[in-house]
Length: 194
Image (cartoon, rainbow, N blue to C red; front, side):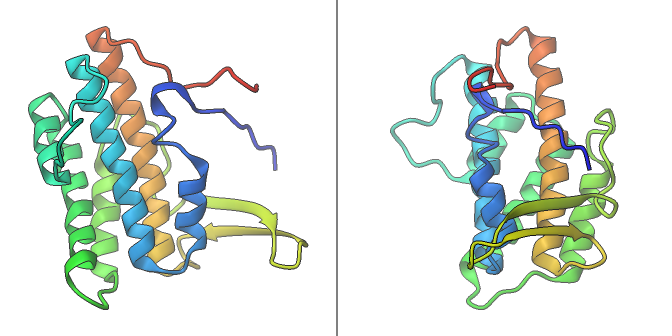
């Protein structure tokens, strides 16, 4: 398999930290997985709001909830369809935060998958069910190990990760298009260490 790697950095480095995605796919705890994804989405909202207002950090100095950042982002031009998807992820995260022992439900994953598949149609990205994640590394004994995660073979947590990665690809496409249309300067690809 020929893998092409692109070093993401610049304005998008907090959104595409590979350690976050590896943790999401590797840690078996659903709550931790959802929380990591939620934190990444919060960085998306921070980036969007800061770039549109030409500030370093629009929310510096105060605590602002995810929902408030989401509404502010929508008021700054975040699309209604992305608002709806991010709000759905926020609702899932809140269930984990407020219900001890909560677990992802198949119906939630299906509903989220359908929303993500339909959002940002201009982004030519695979459907969630056909996407797979390949992870290579070493096992606890130091031996090489490779795992491919597919929709059909995965539990709800891994399905969430597959949906989340597709969502992030679509969000990135949408944000790039919006920044370009608005004449906002940004960097996504890091040229350091390439």
